[in-house]
Picture (tube, rainbow, N blue to C red):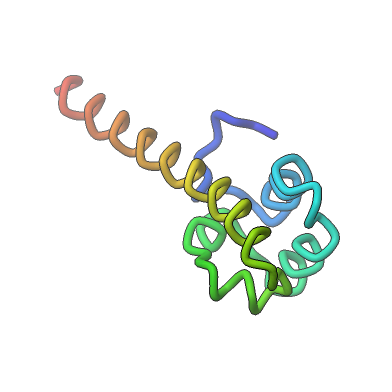
Length: 92
């Protein structure tokens, strides 16, 4: 997986790779859901616990594990956005 690529720009294939790496205990369920719903990086960043239930992850403990991984992705995306903003400010 290309970690320098913004999560919001991830393709379905990038999301599938992330699921395989970060959620191995739920890989079958999540990969089927990602494919069925064509979940891109932008959509992945917006997932909440109720979405996970709809995608087939019903156990609260499993949802929390996935949500923690998603939170890390959101933080990384925010840092990248702030870095872009700061570099734009200082380059002028």
